[in-house]
Image (cartoon, rainbow, N blue to C red; front, side, top):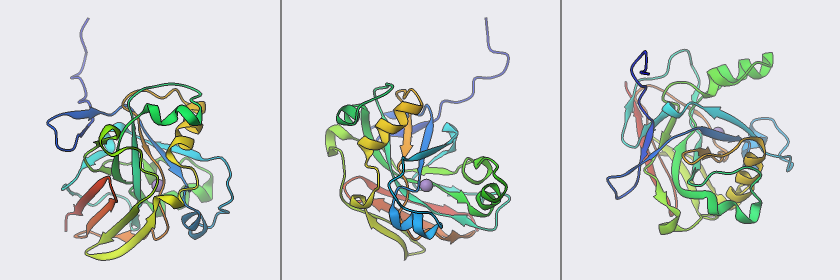
Length: 229
Ligand code: MN
């Protein structure tokens, strides 16, 4: 038996300080995981259970990339996020065992065509066109938890063309990584290679062609991408 078309390439993320890379299975994203961002998006930041959406695995793009400006949007927003990478799968993972399933961490950008997301919200349609488009998941090199531990405090920020846009601290996450893994694993069987974008703090705003985004998470790394002029 053979494949009738060429095998699609396996999406991967580089591992920091190593020639190795991490194969990507799925990309899950948490909606509204910082209270101040929930408020700026018009939601009640009460501690309702987290909700999730997905991006395709091949939406990842690497640190240093210059990207074509996405199609079909006049309101492309940055969302800087801590990313957790699953190394051991499971279902119904209890909170107190959840971090054992996390292989490492990265800095990510959940790029969002906010105008298309708003149309989807207004018309009660899926978010895919707003969230799951090509190259919508820039990510820094992954760092193993065996080196940095499991960050639950530390500055998270992104600048655009050198000007501050988002700045917060991981302590402001509504659902921390362990709680997020526990909730997610009750909905989906987690598999080694899954990435979880854990949500963004306040300050989301638009970027345009020619802009450079530079962000990071203290203790994890930094991520810079540019949209071609
Ligand atoms: Mn997000």
